[in-house]
Amino acid sequence: MPVHVLGNMCDMDRLMALAKQYNLTVIEDSTEALGSYYKGKHAGSFGLMGTFSYNGNKIITTGGGGMIVTDDEALARKAKHLTTQAKSDPFEYVHDEIGYNYRLVNVAAAMGVAQMEQLPGFIKRKQEVMVFYKKNCWALGILNFRK
Image 1 (tube, rainbow, N blue to C red):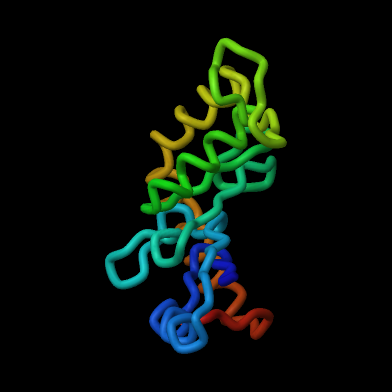
Image 2 (image 1 turned 45 degrees about the vertical axis):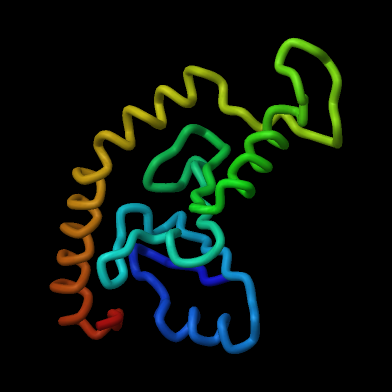
């Protein structure tokens, strides 16, 4: 599980080559790289799925919860089924397997959507802070930054 940190994505070419060589499934933890790209592809779009947390300390927060992204339709259907209590009929209380109630309440979801619309501004501000740290901390020899 590659974990992208502070907007910096892992070397996905190398990781995907290793995954192919050893027949491994790749699931990306893309939370801290929301809005980042690696060679033109979004964080979370390389492996079987990408995961994103919306916990309180993340770039976008709903107070909890998160999302997965995948281009595997069967996996997406399965995830949706499990998060809606594994009910085969939305009006009946018949569960075909153990499911969970992991849906966001409407207010939290609306908060997340509103923040997603502001994501470019959030990223820009984080980049400005990074430039400030690089300029001021590098000169003092306090921090080293990834190139």
